[in-house]
Image (cartoon, rainbow, N blue to C red):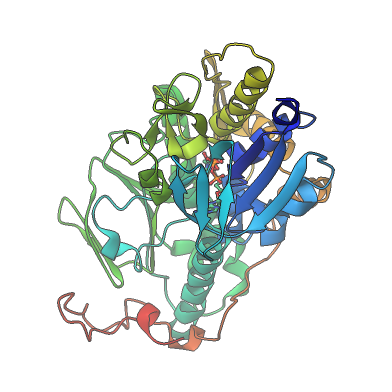
Length: 442
Ligand SMILES: Cc1cc2nc3c(=O)[nH]c(=O)nc-3n(C[C@H](O)[C@H](O)[C@H](O)COP(=O)(O)OP(=O)(O)OC[C@H]3O[C@@H](n4cnc5c(N)ncnc54)[C@H](O)[C@@H]3O)c2cc1C
């Protein structure tokens, strides 16, 4: 009995994103041993990914090694680099893709979400989403390659289309407009990037539906100022190489289509003995544990509880709440219910402008952008990253010249890129031999 009482429960945290990392930190000093498992060795600050995709920030500005973040945590037993592919709640184990198995007493699942093509996963190669550093670098490469390809022939670049007018889509469209229509214009001689069409498409009747109608209108005005064309009330009917077809029949010959239209929970959710919501998120109990298993918590984008949104503050609060429940168990105290504290919503629109809803107060323009800047800097992990990002933004604002991270990385292929103007007629999608630049061997 004495031996059992001195054994420290083993808490396994899968995913070191916002939810997982905050759970681990909130367990600092608790009488537990913690193992963190993540398939990446770094924590990624996804809210600024769009700035990597549009060549303002470098990947290292928004990513931080997990080992470095947690180096001072004494009850951390291990950080394991690997992808979890199985969870056995009877045996209380998680299985990794490399075949290893890790036992747990408590499990916190914080594996986040992925893109949702709503049944059209075949569109993914031609309409990439933005979720990882690799996605961001791929989009950056496609943008810069399009500018280079257009320069060879002169004229205007083909349209850039962003599907989904939530915060990610709005921020992306604004930043692409800034980069393509404003920042690079003096650098190209034969082509006219300033005349590029940036089209933002959404089935909804207004952009930024999670913000107030006034903020939505203000954001739409700011986007229009930047030269973004907003197409509302129409979804996407088809995506083919170099083309996007809208529900209303419009066929846009696009240089790049970016998918920012929705998220689906990580497929790992399906390994848990719980009900899933329509986008695959795990329906958790009020304390964030599984209704069928109190030892398993699910937090962040992969968890479904009431109308809590899939945003970073919710994941952070849930990670901390799960940690608190484990502490309460150890102290013999009853569990408590999670309540999301919504401190407001922000979205930036291009350089130096934003909209913000804070309770009943709406902010627009420069004031909202300063608030956005402070909130994002405070949330960014790592002092060096904060200094680097702040320097980039202030430099941008002061000089109106973005720090040019317009690098084409990866194996050379820009000379093979074609603009839709030179692209042959779109291949028949039924033809498996149909050629597309992005499907050619690299
Ligand atoms: C482009 C973009 C912009 C966004 N902008 C904003 C914003 O402005 N404001 C805001 O509040 N929110 C924003 N979000 C949403 C926010 O980033 C998420 O809500 C938040 O990251 C969710 O945290 P999480 O811990 O649930 O998941 P994540 O932060 O996604 O972390 C999941 C972790 O789990 C790891 N993982 C996944 N699967 C496995 C596996 N099988 N095995 C091991 N490890 C695994 C991943 O590597 C990752 O480290 C944005 C998201 C994106 C993609």
